[in-house]
Length: 139
Image: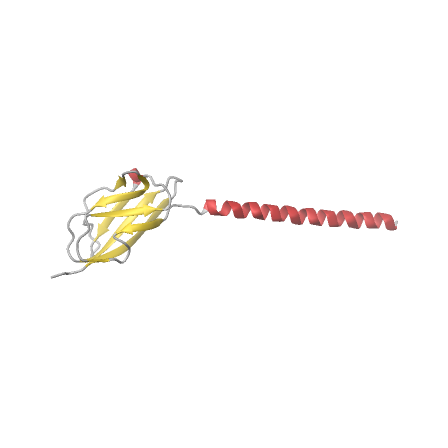
């Protein structure tokens, strides 16, 4: 009888260890997959940069993202301090760089501006944000 109880205890211990190992293995697999789930495109660089104070109007806005984007579906506008769109152009894919788009801009007067963008990353997720820059009055 005592022999059966010891065997039963060993079986219980073996089952508990197997469950712990299986749980740890599943958690490790989950942690490996998490970065892929959150790996959507994000803005990594811009020209002019965020919060820049420029002495003259830029001829273009260029945005760089962490992943390739679908340039054909990109939207970029430059808004003045009254939230009026001051651009009449469509953004274009940067030549040779699938992670970047360029928007030509007209001559801008001194003041504050906001670059507002919306892009579709190749993984199918939409990224939308904005940032500001300023052109100093040099007169």
